[in-house]
Length: 236
Image (cartoon, rainbow, N blue to C red; front, side, top):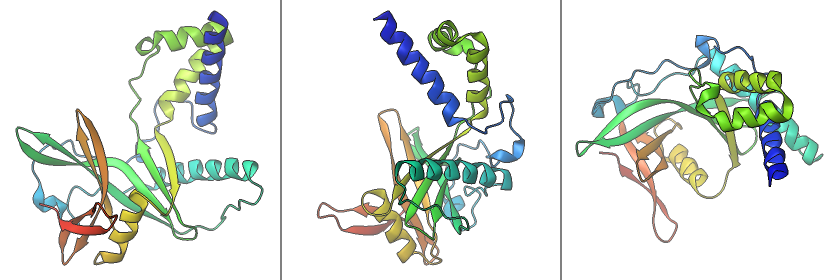
């Protein structure tokens, strides 16, 4: 059992460092990496209108970091599948994410640092999630730190903590077709300007993510019926 635990810790530590390859190992990243987000937690129906304050722009530093991670994902895919081709010249579009939550029986909205990247050259959506790990300390997870330290040494364990704190963006991706992708496709087609945003509902019992868009200047949310048909309903 002890041997198995060491193997698990070893693999976990290596996976963290692998995910942070070419990431600055300093504890603090430049402030331009993520958009500045106002911590306002209030009902803001007008802020959901086009150009509203809930839609934060992605900084150039954030774009560079995300693109670098996407390139590494594609290089890994190419190693697994030689037929996979990476695109040198890309035409990415970036779309915002808005968070919704309930408080005192009312729905509140706030901006999110997350962003959706749509690659217009190949049918792929990349979801970039931002994590503020600047306050993470080894004492927050002593089992992980001490386990890695025992197996790989203190220098490796300390380096793992620094890289973990610096790795503020995680990227997931999916090809078009099915689930949320179909809703995004619908939102792009039905919107006034070919754009969309994601509404991430936060709840103690879980959450959900839906594609939204503007039609005739009003926000709509995509809903899928029992038969699989997607329709847009005005977001109140």
